[in-house]
Length: 105
Image (cartoon, rainbow, N blue to C red; front, side):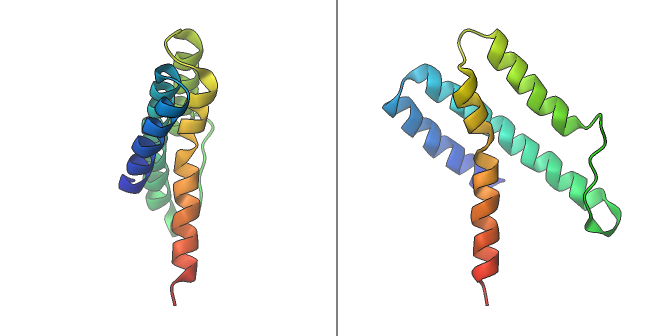
């Protein structure tokens, strides 16, 4: 999770420098919520018997994502696409982590 937050902060600064502050803040919020989502996902996997996947319909993870998108849509200070892409930074971190694990002898 720390790696996700570090990546989100670095990418937030880059987005703010390349585009504008609104896009950077939106990306940062999405990245922070993505890290929270990753933490909830990890807790869900830990709590599942056998380490399998469980996704109940009323999952807290879905509430977190939907809440983020509603806030981004309703708030003029945020842009929706950078918020969504910031949220997805947790997936990039998971991919990098999986590649690193697979490359270990």
